Image (cartoon, rainbow, N blue to C red; front, side, top):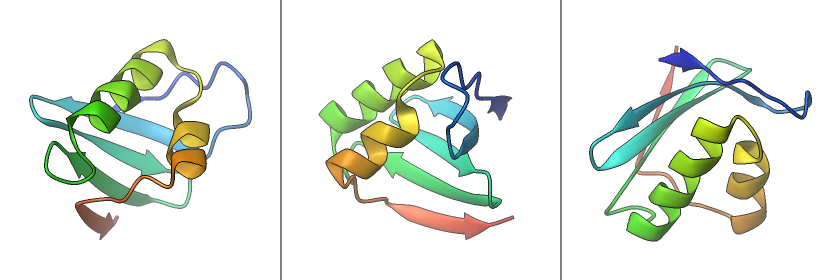
Length: 75
């Protein structure tokens, strides 16, 4: 995973990993969520990838869009 740049300075996201058909997002509490083309769907995943690469707005996008996740793991 690569560190999330957190340009706004107040994100709950700490790291992410871009996958071919999804994205893994690790939050500051250590929990990692998988979002893929099946859940929540391609449009959400691609939007999340854009936010992750930009280093801004990923946590807000997830919470405001109520994006469901495909899998969850506690690290």
